[in-house]
Image 1 (tube, rainbow, N blue to C red):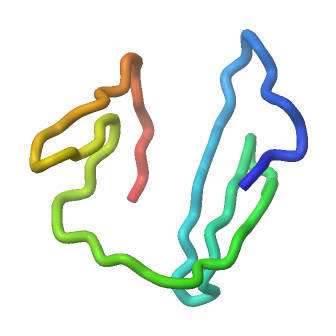
Image 2: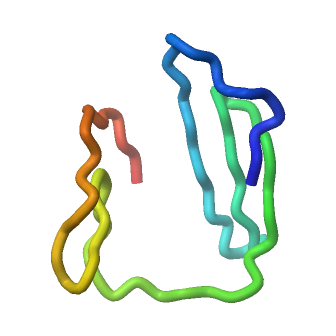
Length: 74
């Protein structure tokens, strides 16, 4: 997916990715504006906890986000 405009330097951006299982698509929003969407052709089930700010690899947490994350909504 791609945003229509290049990112602004020196400014905060509200970035949201949405998975709509019913519509079978992923959507990208930048500062509240829908920028792009792509079809989801196949699904993948999660078998673990929902995690923000790091990735799992070989059963261990890796690639920690070096910054702050706040106002997360589920």
